Length: 381
View (cartoon, rainbow, N blue to C red):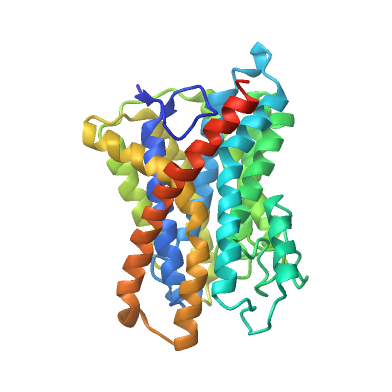
């Protein structure tokens, strides 16, 4: 049986949380940071260390679907309103989104206020990009608000594309998916899983991997929807059918597997992208749901593990949202000076731990106080 514990970082939720799942979310977030650090030194997907960090997104979606289903499925029968659900999710997610884009706005000008190719961008256009971003309105490729010029939907803070899809998943859940019978949801998950596996195996992304969803170019956006439409519903499905099993050391076992899976070098070569596609498909369609199930089944058997899971869970979301604006600065420094990892590893270490510290400060000084205020005003007032 799992050990449930109230999270200090979840004012707008009333059910206890799975502490091991919180911890695993933090482990995956740390791997995303490492993936993005080493992205600055890669010349192609095949030579990047910590190569599969992009798959953390699929793990996040599975975990999110499971937790949303657990937290809300039984409330609808008791008269819970859709409006209340949306208010709770906005309070949970949007304050950090605002901070992340503000940081992106600031660091864009620290970097020089230019696109990657050196083209200057006007202050008014960057402010317009910030305004659209705050409402999660994506930038079309090549438009004026696509201020970095590399196709990102949210050029002031690229990884927020996952929150765009998270919101879509939440909307679909509240309006449609929660109404599906378990059989219908199972069929939906099977079809979406087949679609996602095919997308990966036949290299529709053109990258030789599943790191899609961040842009509206070509098949990138449909790939992002496929990632969401399998991973989020499969988490919901598991929450309906969940029966915990006994797993000793679940956190450490699952954490080790996550670190290993997200660190594996590119599988095969550029001439055989289906091999890496197969790896991505197996991870997303098979292994990640199993890891979420195991994590939900396990419990922390000592205070040290419990405290670690709580810390990792608390900082995971702020860490994911605030880290990338500083990656832009890191990349600009690397690329403008043609620096190698051996020349800059010390700055990479500072960037890694500095983002952890920033995430913790953002949580304690901004996110928790703001959500506490909003909860009191709009949910308990």
